[in-house]
Length: 144
Image (cartoon, helix red, strand yellow):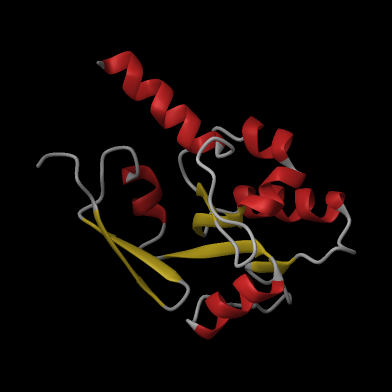
């Protein structure tokens, strides 16, 4: 099928082959890219154990652990920082955290990095709250 992109993940790096036309510019800049994560402690710990974590020489990490004491502006700052990085391909954010910064998540309309809302241990996934899923469903209904 034309337009299908095969992706796989090794550690915290996402790889694609062959690059799609939309991601071709990004692919030319970086052969591999990071995945970032914003979520509760259990979710982040699980992904870190799977090898997603990375801290650069400037002590910048690609993950943020959100607790009940984490200020909303810190979550927003991390989200904006991850979306501005040119070495990031995917941002995973738990739906609970996304709800706390819903306006910021809804305002982001970039293709890369792609923002995916994921469930957490305590809160199941609700597609009605996922702005990315809502945009996809809206575009699909326009094409039919």
